[in-house]
Image: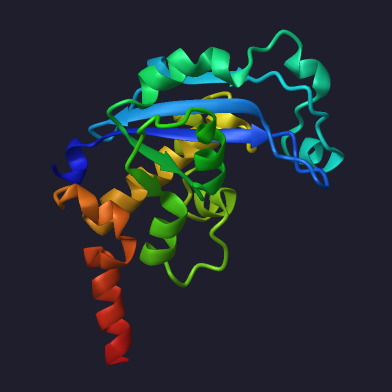
Length: 206
């Protein structure tokens, strides 16, 4: 399968924050699918998630989610059917995928994947950038307007917004690096991309 043929779904979680001796739990989920380079806006999914754990001050300062926002929200397990319908059969995209993988362990043997980490891809394609934070990459690549066209309600550290940003970033990486016609597994080995190999050769000649 070529990269241009892969059905993707980006996922992002926001958490309640980590307390000493505690376990981090999700308080919001966002999922955004993409197929053939087109982001599938009608299929967007986002939801607050119920938890008994208090949201830390530090986490609230980042994402702005308050305890009252979770009133009446479903538990993560309750939205499992929607998660499964959106992620099954797709390659999963996340920017620094460790958190998303950890929270999805609530569903053992879910079988989602392969996982495409846009953080690793960005580091391979643009090794000289000063910051690889998702927001800095979107701003530095002048992708904010594109973000708002796809998702007018976009704001940073909102789970759906960050999921959409991962897709917009992935699309730029694929287009700028000429990867659309490459074999799909190349996304799982970012340092092997034609763009990265070309840049490495250029640096070696200097």
